[in-house]
Image 1 (cartoon, rainbow, N blue to C red):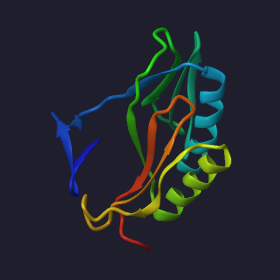
Image 2 (cartoon, one colour):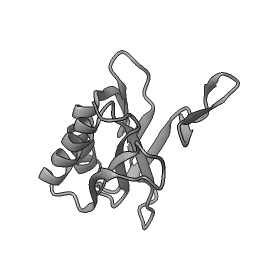
Image 3 (cartoon, one colour):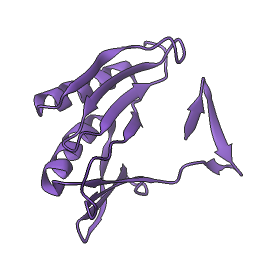
Image 4 (cartoon, rainbow, N blue to C red):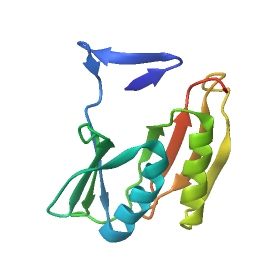
Length: 139
């Protein structure tokens, strides 16, 4: 879902974005990285075929796809994944750092977005800016 402040934008009752797909120059390294950082978020591999992996919540549909690059090069994306609480953001960050990811921003509040926006940013193996974010107040 797309968020503006505390609201989620919906289109005709459905999530505005159905799924997201990125390409990787090193598919094996990228799938290993995403497998590890998704684990604390409760995201797993749902489908796999032809150098493509579809990730999503357990018992759900794939909403994030990773594929072998067919057009390798200097692309970069920002991807933000929802975390249920701030501790999960910290675990995501620790896993990513443990895998050697470049740290863009350590876990912290980002009040310029809204008062409960708590996020951490790292780079995946292809240089994408990947974030885990929690929009909930602390427990």
